[in-house]
Length: 307
Image (cartoon, rainbow, N blue to C red; front, side, top):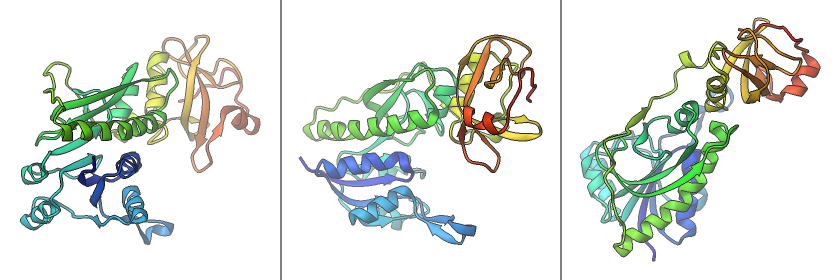
């Protein structure tokens, strides 16, 4: 059962869903993505989005409008006569005329169990909040911010040491599996759209630089969740000997002491309650390395205080 689709997405997270739709035999008539940005050496090259790179390999036409609010952009979109549009982290708001153009509507892969964690950073916020479960919600889009009716939900447990990067990859694969199933049900007429409940709505605000520094005075559970929720980007950090150190992986440690004090020579740090052991770190300007490797070159004795 092949559908004529428009795919709209930009980052790595969206690529598996695009590939899954093509593999399922759907006709992807066009890909919409954000325009290439300066990058490469010295920022002199225009670097296309991950979705644009993949679409080009597949021979799918790529469009990069700055907005879809103009009549010309909306007419161009409608001219594709798509059965449905699939949206995955596109980054541009779809106006009512665009949402109404496809025969079956516009469907979005959202990386949370809606209505929890609507908004920009659902993966990071779920881990930072200590959530034990996440998942993807396939949503029939409306004009609100992640407010559309839910048509399919797939759950995934969040492991005790899982980072935002780990969860990102797992949910990208989960979304790629879920979307073709949702589209098949939509074409059969068996898709059930359930309005999101008003209770439980939480917004996942964009991560700011002001919240990336580690506060060792907080309980170990919160420190650990903070570290893994910001890994690999933008990264939670502290200062050791005046140098900034980013923590990419951690686990719960043993012992207690004054917050920010090392409890052994293996980078176990005391928190306000309990301790966290650092597993993978990255000094500013250096490569990421496991804690054991770092300590071979930079020993950190028990009783060292970090900030």
